[in-house]
Image (cartoon, rainbow, N blue to C red; front, side, top):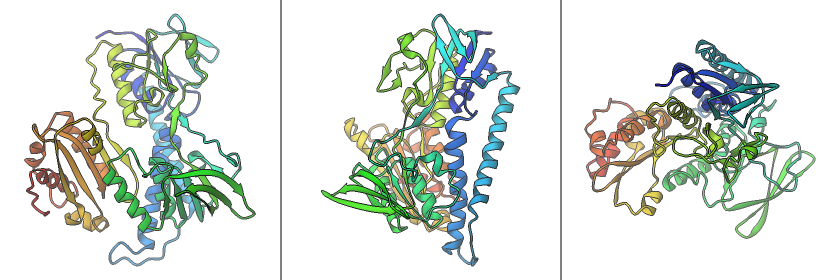
Length: 458
């Protein structure tokens, strides 16, 4: 393995700090430049703060709705205390990342940085030499242009995480992961929530049965959902915001305290001077090969900025893979097996291909399906909503995709990903003894269902 290489990492989010630590552990001299906060979007205004608020929201909702059997209590939510709890968790984790970087000898500079010709990197007013540069500049929220977009009551996800008061009503433009998670949060704390989604389904990137199941559950919980809905504009009324939209060929409007735009994110590649280095771009993302190399020698791009897979854990894995390639070590990254999670109610988790993708690929397949209403632990947890679905190659039995909606889904998906990463088959799951009572038994049951032999299903 090569030693003593000089590696510059631009961006200190999950991908950047993971790459920096991995590179230092491999013996490189590492400089990490981050002009904002270490931890990036995920730690500061994304994954962690949203899940902290969701945890409180769920607890409050379960007490208030009396859904915990035998527990009767009066519940009240103190929004400012909830915010302080969120900030405490973010602060602790951020301090932890700083400590890890120090422990591994990474030089951290709070400066804007950009690659320069000839293997140099500009960091603030300083120029350093680097054998390799890893771009890990992340993403920014996609902005929509519509009449009223600049009104103060129109907010993005960053602002939604830091509202001084809990809203009594909110309109969410976008029914993807971000929109659905915020819909779940605000619904839990008692707000009237409306989702406007331009496409025919919410969560269009997930298996169709999963999306449909969640849509029905959200609507049953009181969330108003309009799909195939096109936002036409937002206006400020004396006491509220009003959003106009086209739906089913007619004009509609809905009013609320806030309008939250949650239509996804785009690669953050501006102001890096990449055009001067002739770095190839594809639809605003930095183009890379399977080792995360750009077409410019010595420059790599990982995480959201390459547009491949906008997930924190994908960025971390890509950072490790880029470092392995720079240090001439075997590269271990499987782009086909990247789990995705949605912290909705119920939770969603998936890995591998959807049924639609399998059909499009012309693969002969079988499916296994197990309803969580037949799982004891799921019934105890949350009345057994949801299911586990396994898609397998009919000839070989190799697992092509696993899709879960229900209690503990996000905690279970790694077992499926591990099996798929080892090219496991449905029989490997079928023959693994699953502990009882657990929700994860349902994965074993779904595997049995592929053979038409579920133990606790029909």
